[in-house]
Length: 334
Ligand code: SF4
Image 1: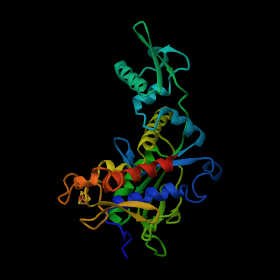
Image 2: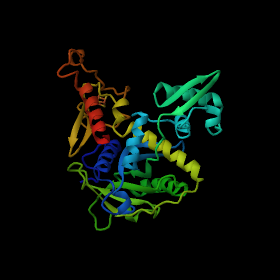
Image 3: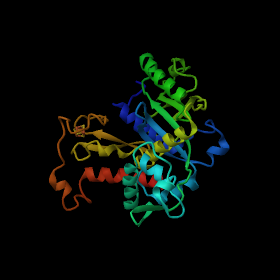
Image 4: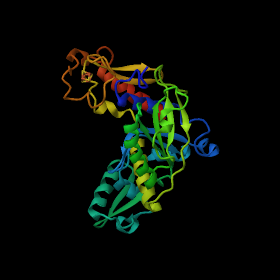
């Protein structure tokens, strides 16, 4: 059986890794300090990164109490401009230019972000003459504990390992994440081939067995990671990590339906253990997100009757798929 049997795309594999991480992170007591991990919870996201580097799966370990305080700022992510304001907004009314640190971009962008924050009810604002004064609604909490990056490669052959090795070496050098991992399908060989590939020793290796479905036991640690040492300045690193954590908070990993075609009559979600994975009834495979797009030659819109009058219950299967993914995301984050 092929290492990636049951999956026709790396995309499906990635969703399974995300679901496993949601169920089982951290894997046993092997990751970090058991005392500290017992005090954290986590958020899973996919396809996040910087301009130079995008990770497949991102796990944000968070302080549960601080995360509850983060909820005061709404469900949507806060971009870097909003973070700049909310992290520095004063407890008492003050002119924004005196209250906030000098930005490394023009003040007019700060003003625009202040108006956006006020529109979202996450910042108090008022006019004092021709000046805008601001006051925070609450202190922005320190909710991020650790940032974990996982690269997913179900079939880790030598050439894939070489490419991945270069990327992971960059991650290790930069140290933006606290740990980096590779997830790959378990082969069952005495020594997993991934252990023999030229990957940085700092990267952890997870081997997965998703053929019978995803559950908390369907991945194991084959190599423990080393905590990475940051090379950037502390303030810069904190800001970049918080921006990533905010994106994870706002997007999670189930937002793929926004770019795929759940409005296609062939789109379905198939249960795979405790995961739901997109399935294309026309191609009879787990389709990739890039395949399942507006340019798909097999795309066929849901018949209008499916969407009308709540057929069969509040819209057709496409609407039901979107609703199901949103419900799942809400339940896992609540
Ligand atoms: S036919 Fe194309 S658009 Fe429709 S579900 Fe399959 S891959 Fe997606």
